[in-house]
Image (cartoon, rainbow, N blue to C red; front, side, top):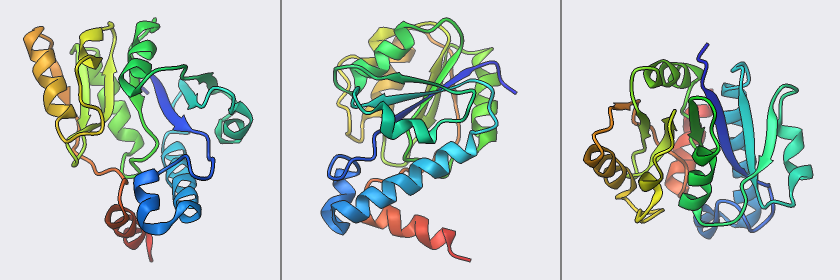
Length: 197
């Protein structure tokens, strides 16, 4: 098992507040159910890892998130700010190698994070590229705040911009598998089709 801590960014399962892009196609209620299924899929994949922290938003929704946590997991609020600011805060407080993932990439496997944890021992930055141009995982053992600044979050340039910034600093980068996350109806229906027996 990797020594790395795994932080999972989750949103509380609140109607109208999750998977808003998906909801435009399938409605708020169906999007909420989809979000719950995706989150439980991701959390089930990592339940055997030794150090997991559920990092949730909004900050007053701990009661909605507690049922998702395993007994040995920690739970903390994300705090204020945009996505980049909240991720930057996580790495600003690390005391050990840390991997950060979201809850909408159901194709990740435990071995992806184990491999990333091992790679982090020999590299400064580990990234899991997403098919939409973002990343499904970022990991480091030292805080590099510049990696979270001047990034157009939610765009197709997030991964490219992050790699470019890291290379400018001379960081050693390891890349994991390219995986798809679930943002739109096509993504969701493809995922469900693969789940069918």
